[in-house]
Length: 253
Image (tube, rainbow, N blue to C red; front, top):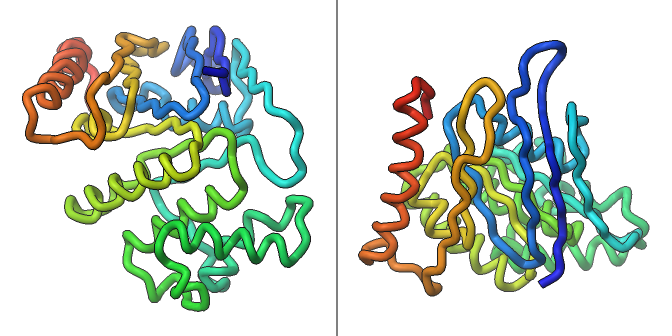
């Protein structure tokens, strides 16, 4: 399988302080789903911003050998909050991410409706963000990211602010979208159950200052996954044990 992103020796820090994250090295294969977990303050969210090119690393490289394509973006970043523009309709919010791509107005509109259909909210195109529930807003957030056809979708705890029922529903929706679009995903979460349910690989970060990769788990469970199975519980236990060791050193999750 081709590699979408190669990250080598990445160190992230602010001003003259110690590094938040040090020596992060990993490769992400095309169409893979990778989760990152770890205590608060180890640089999980900052790592996504560095990969997306929003922040410069202190050391190391992020190599993304994408073929130039004026009709797509190499990265799309989805935050915990939907951050929809309140003065734009739902359709207008999805179109916003497409406006700097080299697409005609008709192509942008077609693609916007295409992703709205994909997330099941095409009938909401002319509504306003305040008319949507939290789960619907986050689905629009995903639609806006998918509309730019990213080679790598970066998700920063996108479901953490939602209630448990909505969160589980959107986890299933995300897997459906992943299978439909074949997009490579890097997903940050504090929820160990969520990490095992969604990802094929879970990277555990820990250690302060200068967090590093403590464990790199593969999750070879068949899909769809049964949260009540022994195998599922065993993988969650492995993650919890790794994080318990980290927390025993005084770090909080």
